[in-house]
Length: 500
Ligand SMILES: [Cu+2]
Image 1 (cartoon, rainbow, N blue to C red):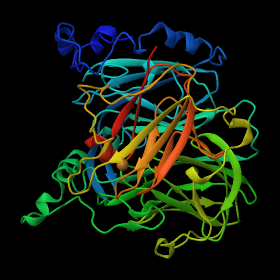
Image 2 (image 1 turned 180 degrees about the vertical axis):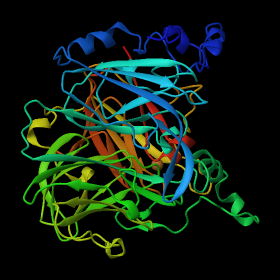
Image 3 (image 1 turned 90 degrees about the horizontal axis):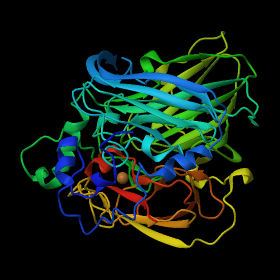
Image 4 (image 1 turned 90 degrees about the vertical axis):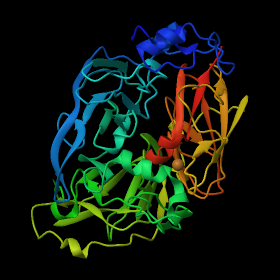
């Protein structure tokens, strides 16, 4: 536990660094924070809840070195930031009840953290800079240690600045020793949109978007702002940022990954959308896939032609392998381009990439429209606390926020959504903007109203209201935010704050 991350550090306006913490301890408490009431990451209750999680007694270890490295994306040689010198970081596989121990070394020029997306884990390992830990300074190390609570398809990524928009992410697969699903192989598929080192950096793109459309009347070229992308599935504009490349396990279509299999094998596709500004529509032309899990939790199975994944979402699906080459296609929703991977049974010839479909239609759904498997339904109970999150902001001002407020880490609890241990919380997300937003809650897996899927990230379309519920069983301070990296970067974030 970081010595600076104590109740005291939450007293003042600034908790960013050790230096400011020292100052903060002398400053006047903000009227918005009531530190004595909040259950902070160093609270003894966090360890008590951790001790109740399943425990196999096994440790699973991983080293992650965050640093700059040279690589090639879509034929361009570039330098980006990633873990262990590669695009997608190592896939971490462990089992429910294992204690995951990840040693992070920061060789970047800026501070970093690692967030374990989708996990109901101990709050002090959640990896949100200044909220659950002090960010890991350049040249420093940090050890994340926590028990794995549930099986499923998860991922990890940096939660500092725009770092996730480079290559600071990887897959985290938690195996179920009593896995009820039968399959022969599993294939982890990580999708990402990419601009870093091709058209600029993610920060430059955010800076350009942050100027809003006020600049459009001036004689200035907008390099990154995407105009006119449209998805009727997402209810309007599909995205904000021009992405020169789309990656399927780090590869573009000219160099697609080939997954070796056998005719008749059942492959569990574990699809993860790691993108910053792009939803993907994933399907296998001419074949149905059976959706089995959304965000790691089982759903009532559905056979579909394609599934849409927002940024941050995961979908597991079963595909029965045909003889020859089978393309698994990921179309950037409402944007130009295609990414794909190939399943090969060792015969036939790979399809011409020019022949890949530009449209996937038929029966199409997304995780937010699936129903929970009965084994993971929340127990029937009326909510005793209701929170409303209005999503606010415009493309013109690029002032994305929640309830009209752009999140400011200097006052993390301003506008916080307070919850108490053992509450049943209902959250109504009302999208008052003209953009769709994939809203993500840390540390919990909510249930969409009406026996919907258990999820941690859900698509909220323009003018739509999405209602979900969750049990407040994981004390601490938990971020909730849009998983569009550019919207989050501008402040569409808030805190679900456990209070006594
Ligand atoms: Cu958003």
